[in-house]
Length: 185
Image (cartoon, one colour):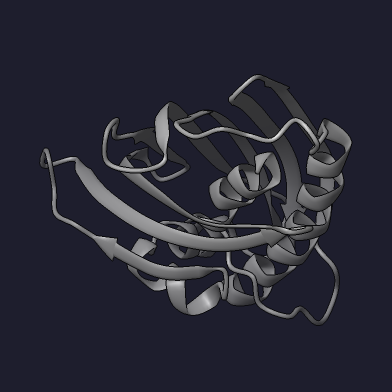
C-alpha cells in the first residue's frame, strides 16, 4: 500500500508515457516513512526548456490522458482566485494488493517555477499532506525538485517495506521523467 500511495503522489503530477530519445536524468530519490505517513524527495534533470516543463506539469486536467494509472482526473473549481482544486483517482496493484486511491489537492502556482499542493482533508484517501515542485532552468535543460509528505487515511500492510517503495518509485520516476521530457520538448 505504501507503494501505491507513493506512486499516486508522483502519478498525479507526472506523465507515464513510453519514452524515447535522450534519457532524462533521475538523481536522488529518498523515501522515508513512519506508520501511515511518508515523505518523498527527488531531484532530476530533463532535456527540455523550463517554461515548457512547467506548462506540462501544471496542466492538471490533461494528466489523465498521459498516465494510464490515473483513471479519472478533474479540476473542480477554484476555492480561491489563486487556487485550483484537483481530484484524481489512481488505480494501482502492488503484488496482490490492488487499490483505487483518491486524492483531492488545492494547488497554487506562486510563480513560474513553483507548484504547491495541499491535501484537502476528508475528501480523499489522505488525512493530510503537501507537496512542492520546483522547476528551474539548468543550461538548455531543466532541474526538477519535488518534495511530498502524506498521511494515509487507510491501513498500510506491514509486509511492504521501504526498499520496495524506493525501488518501485525509482522505476516509475525514471519512466515518468523521460515522458515529461519528451512532452515538454
